[in-house]
Length: 493
Image (tube, rainbow, N blue to C red; front, top):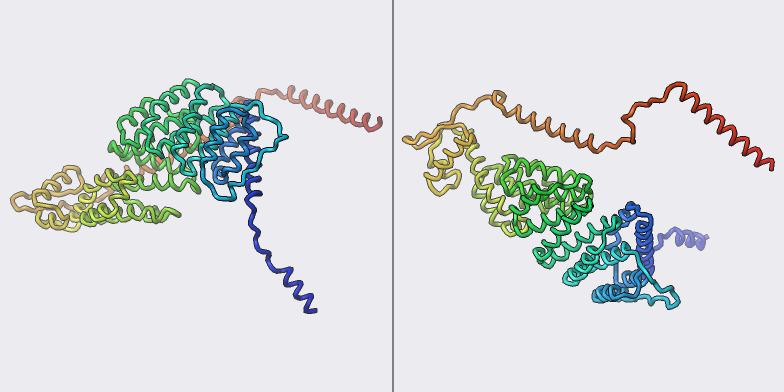
């Protein structure tokens, strides 16, 4: 009986998870890549882009599993013996990897020799090697590899290459950005943008236009970026990720040009278009800029904005800035800016944050105006931590002129006399707030209508008469009867 109990206990014990051997993992990855290549070949034969788009969507998951062994095998399987193949194998071999990945399977000598390859498959495999070099931090090799890929693409004009070409240009630009050589490829991108427009390659247009904007903004060439935006038309049929990027770049340009309302709209739309579960880096970058733009508009972001999942620690410096602006504490504001200066410069928001200096003073003045019916200039100077009374007088007079505070300066007495506060509902403010909400709702409604899809000819009235309908039903019944009789004849036979 004891022995039986022991056996039952041993049976019920959970078996420890077995580690998947590297060889099995490699074979699984290789199997996935073979399926992808088959889909790319299907696109080349049938001219159906949906198969290729499916392959491109798998790139983010596939790139995490790539290694020397898998890439070498896939290149040997599909590439004919050409100098290009040798070049790609050389790039793959140059990447230092661990011992498990170095066990490269020898190609079967009896295997059929590859004589030709579809250009789509060739470009796809070349792209995989470029992505692998970028992921393994071999950026110099990646620039050379991607440059030869772009040169190869320029020799072809095939519709089945359009989605692939957009991806290739993206990683081409990325490799040069990582080596800080973006300015070298600007001419090539401009020529590619012109070519994509002439060929009506909408995904290519959208991708390259965004790459050019990124190129200009990388070197703070905001005027050139703005001219590019106003002189080009962004395609409506672009993917949501490209639309989100374009809206973000537009928001950055508008913010620098002091058009904060437009910048705010663009950035909010970019956040809505971005994936809500992934793309954490993009959402974080947009959230940082959006916070500063909102503060420059005189609005204070809600506390929940800084509690977004996964973004809390990165948004801490911006929370400190918001607190200083909300209170109107000029000293605290300068302390936060000095403490996180390097952080803000890295985020490229330092210039905009310096503009908040005036907003902090305005907030402080507004609080003083509400708290005191009369206050001396010297006290204003002390409370706002200003350098002199003359500076305080100048700032207060400008605030009165801009409508920030409702007060009068008594120069002889050296004080500010606040006017009585009027009922806010007697002003235009409630109307403006309602207008803002109504515009927001109407924009959502318009976007929803644009996104709707209808079957063809749905708008046309059904012109079939009653007699025609009866005739059609009669014909269908006769056809069904004839088919049934044929089935009976087959059974008898």
